Image 1 (cartoon, rainbow, N blue to C red):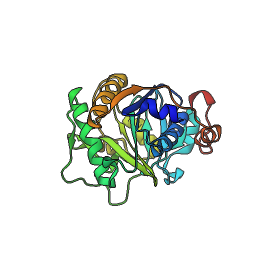
Image 2 (cartoon, rainbow, N blue to C red):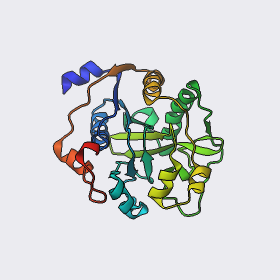
Image 3 (cartoon, helix red, strand yellow):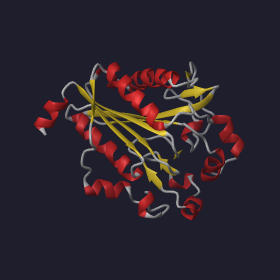
Image 4 (cartoon, rainbow, N blue to C red):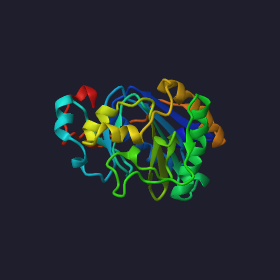
Length: 261
């Protein structure tokens, strides 16, 4: 471990997992928080061909039409962070793990701001007309089961519609902030999964940009490293402990074949 830390000193460890198993990617975020607690910052980018429903840490599974997901073989999983549900399908997940004493990690809103200060201009560079909302609002008085309907401090929008949603996990010695960047939108599927009208989804959500996930991932690696004053160090994914993999692959709500978890 000491040797690995010496090799990565001054570097941002970058993991690109485009097309890997969703449950393993969710488990990997926990591993990266542990590495960050030891002083190793990292950036993880994921994309699943998909659809995969991912709930917030404490979100009720009943927010989702579980019978529909079972019938269609759509996994229903949980992530390490709070918030509400996302239907991932060919979008891009971006997760940044930092030691808790890093300047970016000071405060929930501050971390969102520094994170979006990189993510927003990067999206603009690949043709996205995203904007930070000066007065974030919620689309409903009662919190929506759909992450992209709520507009808070973690929001990037296109024409007033949410295109990027973020969430955080904060530990005593490390923090992780991640984003789901919409690169397409199946409004009908969103509506069916969360049992809402399609018109409601179309009124609230918008793709950020029509670019391949790998193009955006490559640009983000360079820009995050520069913003953090680190060098990019592309790395193979660290080993994920078997109990952690099993926990994140537990599909007690919507069992599906192992090959698409």
